[in-house]
Structure formats: C-alpha cells, structure tokens
Image (cartoon, rainbow, N blue to C red; front, side, top):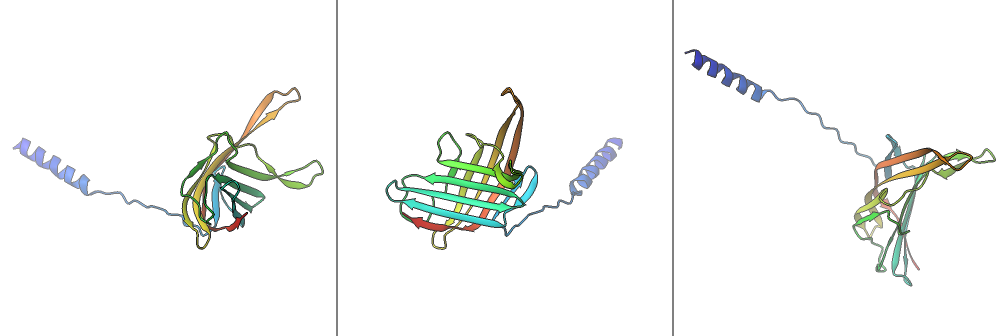
Length: 187
C-alpha cells in the first residue's frame, strides 16, 4: 500500500510539474531607418544616407558605395561586383573584406585636427576577415537594396620610439540597410 501511494504521489508531482510553464516574453525591434547598427554596444541610426551603384562597361564591373552619417559618426560600405551586366540590380551574395581592394568598410568619428576644428577621422583599419556586407534583397526596378553588414576597426597607438603602447578596437555589429534607395549610373 505504501508503494502504491508513493508511486501515486510521484506521478501527481510529475503531472503537476508538467503543467507548470514559464511565461516567455519575446521582444522584436522594428526600425524604419535606412541604415542602423550597433557601434560598441550602442545603437546608432544614420540620418543622412547616400548610395550609388556604378556600372563601368570597359571593365564590366559594378561598384556599390554607401555612406551613412549621424551623431558625428560615419559608416562607409564599398564593394565591387566583377563580370557584371549593365543592369541596375546586384547579385544576392556575401562580400567579405580580404586582401584585395574589392570590399572595403570604414568607420569614422569626429576628432579635432591640428587647427582645433573637428573633422570625421577613420577610427582604424578593417583588415581581412574583419568585415562583410551581405546583400539579401534587391529591387532593380525601384533601385532599392536590403542587407546586413559588420566590421571591426583596429588602430595601433605608438610611443615616441615607434613601439605599440595600446590598440583601439571599434566593433560595428548588427548593421543593416533596409530598402535603401540607390542611384544607378552607367559609364
């Protein structure tokens, strides 16, 4: 009898635990911004955006350039699509920073120059494997592009003897451009 009541109690406890469920809240962020990113753990949204896709017939290359500026910061995206046709669209693919100059990303912040005037200055360089642009959607009729990007800049700081004393690292993650209009040019 004791075994039966012990088994019944255990089954009741298991059934009770099965029915206990935690409430789960899922948050989704939606942005209407054309360019948005997380820069060093802070959300940044561009308020001035400029994008151009240029086709050059002589080389059969398309070059996409894009810049976004806000809050004394600027992000630039650049890539070359080789062996392209003279259309206003882009290939849906990933463009990784490598040792060639076909893909380049940069991050600028406002810094004082020698005259004391503040100017946008590169925060460092984006080396091979430290950045990528992924094109996920293109509307070649309306000339709009959607995609993501990420990058990391590094800058060595030197003492008077040329020795590295520190390294500045800036991380731009979760970058996205959403339905970004671009100008198409053909040369």
